[in-house]
Length: 438
Image (cartoon, rainbow, N blue to C red):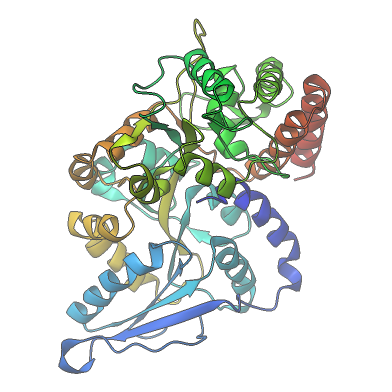
């Protein structure tokens, strides 16, 4: 999750190189499970395998850099054993490697029957002929509304969502006993702690920026001053002719960003690791990050850990909105075992037992309402979920890749001292040029 900021931009680069790609990532492993395994236990083997299914084999590709593949595998294994089929989970060391192999394999036929990934790649994958629609049918009402919106494009759904995640404001109760009511309050408290030598300058609010910027983590602050990416219509569609970078709200957000840097609240050079370490050690009272940080921060802070919404500026009419990302099971258009894949999605994935099983190993807030209601007994999960209801799904349109890249770079430049108006205007021109060319 820490690299969440740039995977859409990376995908654009991958698409441009697809014609030259020769196959999948070398940093993968596969675990194959047969229903005929002796003594009722799964037989597993590791090594590079073909991505395509065949006969009674279901092939799933998943990211092994987090716990996602680890969560999927035993669930798929059990389903395979119960149904007399074989399940192979091919594991990739990162989502970008998986996407690169998927795009290359769309030409060679080396594709899985299903793969797991973030919803905001949907538009790009459809454009490149990679993705097939998935009908949620009568189960649609069993998912959180925001999850269904995220996987819906042009009236069709393109995957089964299983987790909904967004950033929030992790807070150290030893340094901020209550959730700040406004951003003004959070900033004032951070300044006091910095002046006292308790907090580190540049980390009054720990938030990653880095040399490429990070529009994903910046979004609550960006929107709190009226910034937006694309104007969204009542039906959930996006107007790509109304792009918000370079307009008044984005410039106001840039001006505010620079002031926060000057005040020691933020710093251009802060990376994910720096932000994480500072909050863990108690030298940052606040940390803008996602639920993936809860296990580590519970260990570091114990009872002092609290999850808060990112509040608005005092008196502002703008909402500090997080981007909402939805982890999704998707089906390639060229899947060899499309019927088997559909059966797995309908009979296994879209069940409370499966969603509970995913959460038990990879504890992201479930998209499945019944599983979320159980998970929300944990106050951390509930706090992330409550704040996420104020957010918006990352636009699942191919044009969003241009915004992530150029808005992130604009953030870094402004945090490094560049003029906010000029920088945002230049980013606007760059994004619009790329949209026109696409």
